[in-house]
Length: 300
Image (cartoon, rainbow, N blue to C red; front, side):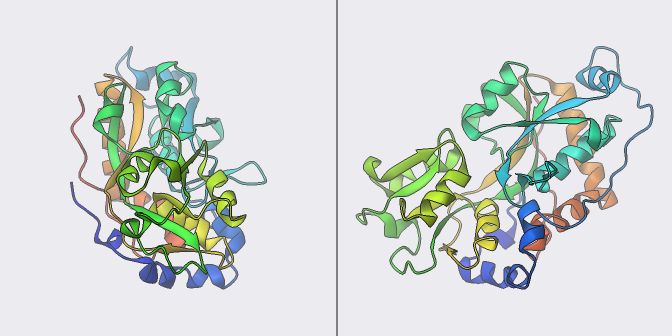
């Protein structure tokens, strides 16, 4: 697994990427960029009978789980439109099934509900800042990864005491993250259980930080970067990333053919420039460096 060096940076480097946001791009950042790119929608694709691809292509629609509250990756705008890098990746995959963006049914997928949604058949796949790990892989399969993130801390801009996860020890700081997420487990070695505050969505943590109900929000850097960009200077990131978080596409357990199809779609997107356009229209409006598609895992 290749680690993207742009993620091994501190809050000071992120601040460089926020210059554009401070210069009047707040509205576009809320949705994760300006005009959404267009991707190929394959006409009359052919798949082996009985495969997930054949069933979805014949139906002409797909249910995709994603986040609705994460600027730059998955956000439902006031006009009801979905924007963000996760959303664009999902559109790319759907296009290879012959399904146009307007035929996607978006399903809100909080972190703690993603495996349940897949297992109950309420979604066909989940693209929702979904870190691949062994525990989750016992219940669902993953295609990808399509991006590599890293966990970091967000605090109010006037906070000078919290400088990284080690500074949380003995501080009594109230640390907010999301139930059922990998960040909620990763942060536990640095804090007492009484310091941990859990919500269902990261936007609730952001709001609690803004009203001084918590002192720190922790999750993946690219998620928090979107909140910082939209905070009008209220929040900042501190310290370096302290984990590696490969984002995958969650699908029903054991659907190897669907996994192989998605990996091929991602590979082709990187080769044609669609992957890069998806990034530049969303997270790339803040993060200056466009990442490469990570090395894809084998499907099993």
